[in-house]
Length: 413
Image (tube, rainbow, N blue to C red):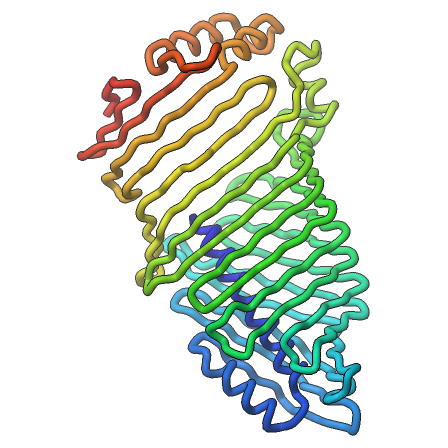
C-alpha cells in the first residue's frame, strides 16, 4: 500500500516536471512567462525558481532552473540546470534539455525516513511543441538514470533507457487533465539491495518496448505501464546460479482519486506467459516431472487510505482478482475486507486448482517426501471443500469481530 502512495507521489513529480518544461516552452514574452509562472507557483505544493533569465534575438535561457514539490510528509527537488529555448515565438520553437537533471526526494514514514537521489543524463534531448505551448513532443537519442534509494535497507540501482520518445498535453487550466506518455526500446535495471545483517542481494531486470502513460488532475491520478517482454534475475542463497524469470506481456495500471485526506486507489497488474529459465528448471526439476506450461500472475485490487500526521491508515480492501498459475497449478482469491485495522472484518474465498496433482507429481519425482505430500493433502481435507470443477478446492475464510478467524467453518482464532 505504501508503494502505491510512493508511485502517486513520484507521478506528481513527473507531472510538475512537464509543467516546468511547458513554462520554458511558452516563454515568448516576459508577460507570458509571468502569467504561466504565477499559475504554477499558485499551486500550494510547487515552488519554481531560477537564478537568471537571459535572452537573445532567437534564444531564451533559464539558468539553474529548479522546482520543489512539498507535501505534509514528502519533499522533492528537481534541478534542471540551464534550459535553452530555441526560436521563441517561431514555428520551429523548441526546448533543448540540459545534459543532466538531478532529483532528490524524501518521504517520512512511521518506521523512518526514505530518501531517493537521482541523476538523469540525456543525449540530444529536445522538446518540440505547438505554437500554443500545450502539446509537447520529447525526443532523446538516449537517456540514462542513476537512482539511489535509502531506507531500513540500502538499495543501489543503475537504470538505462534506450531511444526514449514521448508526448505531453498541458491544458491552459490547471484543474483540467494533463497527459504524459513515454516509450522506449529497452529498459534495463541492474543493482542490489542490502537488508540489515544480510548479504547484498543482486537484482537485474530487462523490459522490451516499455511504455507508460499518465493522466492527472489535482485530485485524480491515472497511470499505466506496459512491456512486451520482461526478464528478471536475482540471486537466492543456496542455489548454484541466479534465479531468472521471463515473461511475455506485462501490464500495470494505477488510479488514485483524492478526496480530502482520503485516497481511493485501484490497482491492476497482469503478467502473462511467465516461465523459469532452463537452468533453474534443471535445478528444481531435473527429471522434468512437472508441467512446464508458462504461467500467469494477475492482481485487481481497490482500497482507500487516509494520511494523518505522516501515517497512512488503510481502510476497506476489495480483491476482485489475485491469481498465480505455474506448473499446472492455479491459486486464486477474491473477497471484500471492510477495514484493515486491528479488528478487520470481511470474507475471502481462495480457489485451488491442480494442487493435489502437483503435490503427487512432486512426491513421485522425489522433490518432496511422500509424508510431506500426505500431510499437505490432509490439511487441505480439513480446511477445503470440493469445488465445482474437477480437481478444484474452495477455502472460505472469514474475518469477524474480536479478530476472529474462521476457515471453512472452523474458528482458528
